[in-house]
Image (cartoon, rainbow, N blue to C red):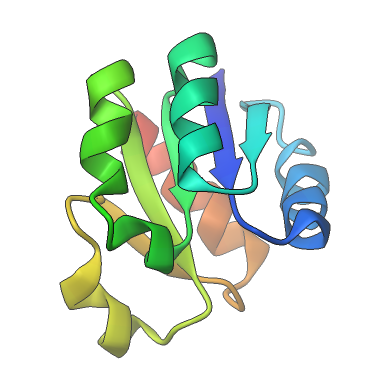
Length: 116
């Protein structure tokens, strides 16, 4: 079971992602956060395998902050910006998925990065 924390400022988007990913028997959403500060706190409490993080949050070294409380966590950028814009700005994240990508791409990415 891959444990996922999702950080995004949109509660509606977090709810949508939760509903879609929890349909997969191999994924459990262990937490949600509206911002990096909350994500760091929740990651320290829940020790997720994967954090889905908005691109703007990556720019403040959120990946480093998350690794400080959950050293083994793998961060996936989930962004509304096109891949060409965000790829060079992902700040230590292991993958990049556009928000308008098919949900199957997000599921596959989460499972792949959790597996190493």
